[in-house]
Amino acid sequence: MVGTKKILQDAATATGAGSTLAVNAYCYVVFQVVGTFSGTVTFQATVDGTNWIAVRATNMNTGTAGTTATAAGLYQLGVAGIGIVRANITVYASGTITVWARATEQG
View 1 (tube, rainbow, N blue to C red):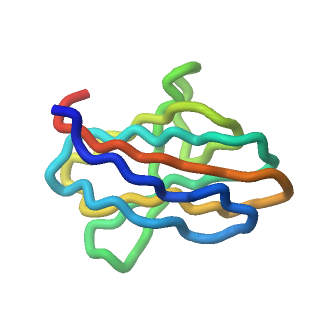
View 2 (cartoon, rainbow, N blue to C red):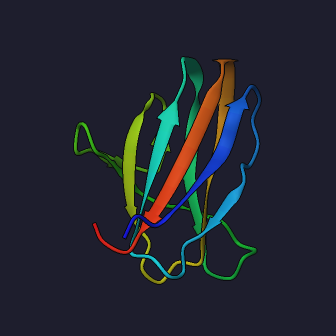
């Protein structure tokens, strides 16, 4: 299945939490970070809808896992058992940051 796709940050130019994506019916989500920027995107998840926790996503180009992204790329996260994800911009210096997310039932 193709899954659900949503823009979480749309040409953002400041720190802040982005839109959320419900993933409770999915196994994986891929974040696509786009833009020329100096900043940090932190991948976060919650089960209860209130308490957000930084989670490790794997850079699909390098294979490195981490809770943040400082460059454009694709980042995959297993979300089985997680309710909601978001991409929070925790550091912003310059440029624009866009983050798409696609949830899927299969990896």
